[in-house]
Length: 130
Image 1 (cartoon, helix red, strand yellow):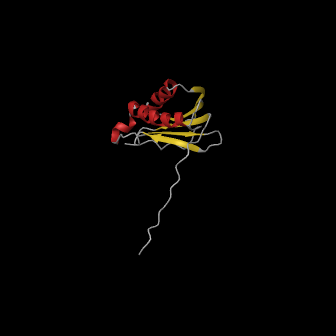
Image 2 (spheres, rainbow, N blue to C red):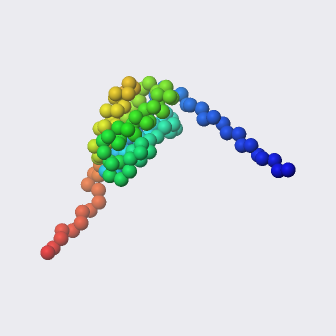
Image 3 (tube, helix red, strand yellow):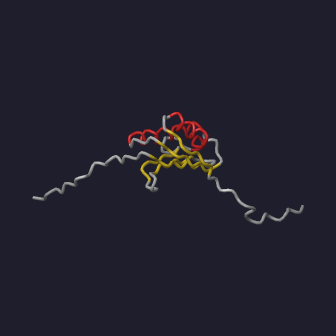
């Protein structure tokens, strides 16, 4: 007779985080939202694709609002009271995500734009001669 091995799984414990750092990365095609504690350990993340949107609908402000609502639920389970927002990117989804965090009842202590900007970066292409 063959014994079946029973695999015991631990129940995932909810991490209690009083202060969180939220990074919003908004590109032309997608919006990624990540929440971490003060040490940088990620405890919640979301994206517009995870919220159920595909294709060109992922780049809309409504989709980023829905992605923000998903991560807000996880953050409320972790009893987050104060957040710092770091926003990168160019899409209109970043403003919608910021508004969603403002309406959720968190105390927003900082909003900082960390979009990378070139300081006269690469050499431009030579002009086209016709």
